[in-house]
Image (cartoon, rainbow, N blue to C red; front, side, top):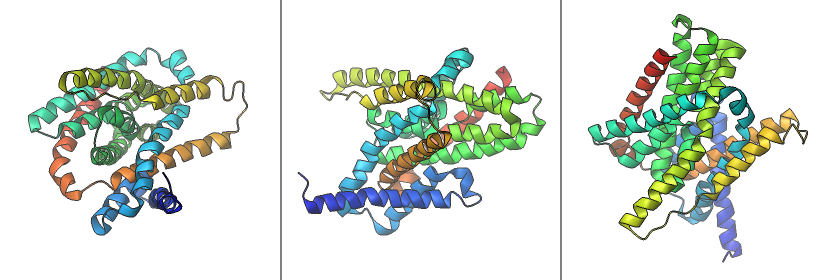
Length: 331
């Protein structure tokens, strides 16, 4: 039961994650850091705060609220960014390729992780992030996989950083590639990590390239839902064999589907909506997700990062290189 004192500390915890998220957004405006983005920047700030000042125990409940409840809210709101109508009309054939990309990314990352004797949990999260939609996918499947908060934060930070490097690399080699703008955009859409990375890499290719890139990427985002339900099935089966622990149904995924349908077939069609409102909602979604990642980032120990993250990051980077090369060859 909440007392006035408890509520005060809870509020301070939520506001604390908002403060660091805001700092992340401001730092992301600096040239160079803008390529990394506010999410990864805020996670870095949170991690360094933990190392220098320790975990703020008094406001733990508020921080955990951001890390768990706001994380689910961000995933629900993220559905508004998914235009299912575009996918079903123009991008349905791409779903087969997108399925192959997800299977390849997860499978190869885990195979390399086994070869390198890397941490399994981190490697699985990075494989999902590489195959689907970066930090958002990691955030969505973490509760299902019962991943540690530390692993979730580390994975989100790695995927954002490596994905940004790849996106910049794409823009640098685009002029020398023997492919047209639309094909380049499709390549970026089916091989890069996050929607922001895809947009960053495809923008120089013009409207046609960017449109194809987003169609290819949105198909992978859509597949987050069936992938999550597959993980639910696997975890429940594993739970029945190994223990009596049950896997909670991720109701937030139904919210994700609902907002996807709402944004695709209702808003702007039956309910007029201003473009400024959509932009504000998109920014607010990113900010809420950043607050959640701050809450997770405060659980990260740099000692654990050094000992656990290098091998999974290497596995994920090699997988990303292979994915980029193979998808370019088969287009």
